Amino acid sequence: MQVRLAVVGLGNVGTRFLELVQRKQDLIRQRFELDLIVTAAGDTSGGAEYFKALDIPIILALKQSGKGMAAYPTHGRGEMDMVELVRSCNADVLVENTLTNLKDGEPGLSTMREALQRKMHIATANKGPLVLAYQELFALAKQQGVKILHSAAVCGGLPVVNIGRRDLGASDITKFEGVVNGTTNHILDAMAHGETFDAALKHIQALGIAEADPSLDVDGWDAANKLVIVANACLHRPTKLADVRVEGIRGVTPEMIAQAKAEGKVIKLVARAVQARGAWKLTVAPELLDAAHPLASVPGGYMGVLYETDINGQIFTRIHEENPYPTAAAVLRDVINLYTQS
Image 1 (cartoon, one colour):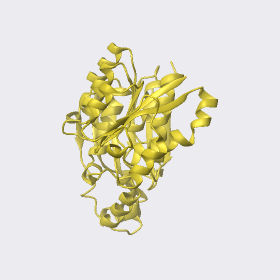
Image 2 (image 1 turned 60 degrees about the vertical axis):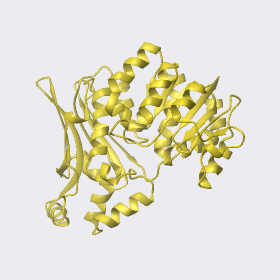
Image 3 (image 1 turned 180 degrees about the vertical axis):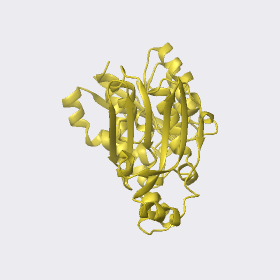
Image 4 (image 1 turned 90 degrees about the vertical axis):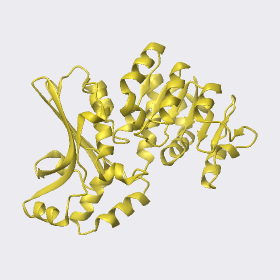
């Protein structure tokens, strides 16, 4: 089965997604009987579309040379925005990985709306539209008979949403806790080993893991975004960012970390949802964790989550993610799952 992709957003995740589509092409054909082709691609320079398929190596070469899709031979158009690209292209799936925008969700939100109106499935790592308009987008997807998969939007390659939404589908989740922001976890771990806050942040940005705006990470908003998505997708609680009490790690000092270490404890930025008497309390804040707590064992370079449920017990899982490839792999996983799971 041929699956036509419109790939919007060609930054760290988007370009690596294309690399993986190319690298795993034979395996995907053999294992899933899917032939993934890119019929449209867009970035901040413009867009390109060709119904017979764009050439992935050409796209990657353009990006590596500092150019964009407007420079794509013959088919590139600098005047084309992403909504226009989706409106005019021949594609079955929108792969939307533009930068997270918490002010209005653009350009991702309008692009997703257009794709859904055209009955295109969506696979995305973009948290902005999901945080700002989760219920609206999923209602529109249901109305149009298509799907939105977004497992890459929470902890990259770790299947946090898949576990909570699918694997715990018959359970009542009573608590969710997570070290869900790799940047802050790296910084806190590095500070525990004597590194400065600024040096640790610079290193994680060089790896391509930190958000474009570091304040999203260090002030707790990236973790809060992910908690909002988990609440909507897995806890079945319509949730907005305003429902989460948020505190970042700027107030965590080396002295506080040293004191915690002397007591056999560790400081982590924890995203938490706790249910009590039918209501949920949602928080993101630095917390002092006992060494026995599962999240205390999530070192720098890792993310981890803990689910507590009524019938599935306690589930803890973590991932080691030091570059954007696992997130790109999660987007690819979602594209495949659109056609291989009911």
